[in-house]
Length: 430
Image 1 (cartoon, helix red, strand yellow):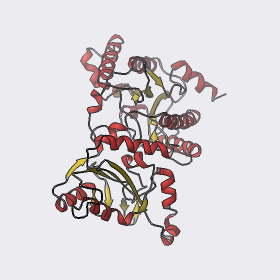
Image 2 (image 1 turned 120 degrees about the vertical axis):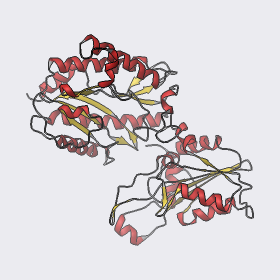
Image 3 (image 1 turned 135 degrees about the horizontal axis):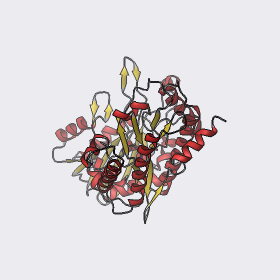
Image 4 (image 1 turned 180 degrees about the vertical axis):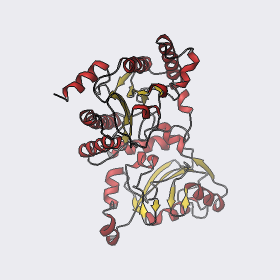
């Protein structure tokens, strides 16, 4: 669990990179309607959560950096005994203060008035403000009929002299390097993920359905992590289905001779494990499956060996392509190196954090590929080969922590060697 003083340190860091005479206004988000009067499970805006630790809708944060002074304001829902009878407990002001470390906690109905009082030149509650930071990531709703971009337009009309800046790149840049506390959250998420994976190892069999294994994984991790749920929708793909990168149907039955590709993860405090293992349903790889598997495993190990501070994900990708092409050519799976793109068509790595595909600089940006990796960053290591013509889809994915002189494979205890997999699967039938 992240302590309140770490959230305070994060806010100090973000304030230190804000423009002078500026404020930042962030929102946790609101519940979204799925259909009729039903709502999707609430997912807190990760940038808001990163700075506060508050995980409930209709909450806001204001950071003020003006006249050389720093102020923080947190806004949460008021106590409503009727709503609590229907929807459960919300944080009190005192509880919100304890979690976030922000002593000035107020009721959320006052947040818009507070922003107006800060920006209004006639009031100038904390001196002149020339910049307002908002998280302008698409789809962040702050009320039923308002997004952060709508709010930006409102502020611009009311206070035309104020420049609106995007908080997203500032916060996601700070999120890149994980503290020791954050790494411990990752370790917990990975430990839980391992339990879930081994439960699938023990249960998979000819005739079992993909969704049965996905349900078993979910049940196992929720039992272990207190119902914190999945890092992302589970991919459980048998046979040829493993050649579809984001296979989500999960209706097929497993057959003797199939490989089962499972791409899955638990989360802890919203920190996401992201692991892929590919194993034979009947416990034994065929000769061809083993050849393809060991090529992918070699690429997986190459990435971990290459990773150190200063290396880029783009460099890891190019090395992976070259390795897979050389090995597939040598084994006769392709006729020329360029053909590797028919069997390998995704990136080998991405950032991991509070989001499974942790953002950097801008939503859906590919800038992270050119970023020189630094100690404290966590990335995936996930080469694969997808040979639909042979009914073989294999991906092996680990989570790597960049260290001062290399990396630590955080998922090292989840078996991936052919001999280890076959030996383990042989024991379940005894």
